[in-house]
Image (cartoon, rainbow, N blue to C red):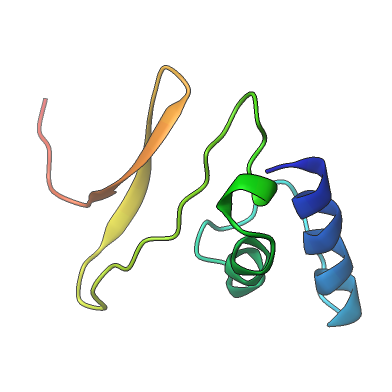
Length: 81
């Protein structure tokens, strides 16, 4: 997140009596509100991120996967090694 988005996120959490941490959920309603309010370009960190809001059907179990620092949303599935 951009510095501006992070400050707004912290402010909105505090205004609602909520505690925040850097380990927030990607589907946090306040995070989504901040990104929608500022817009993608202003909410993203110009060097390290390009935030997006996506719609996931309610019946889908999902997770955020990371590959070399790049994150994407994937449907949960079983895996055996």
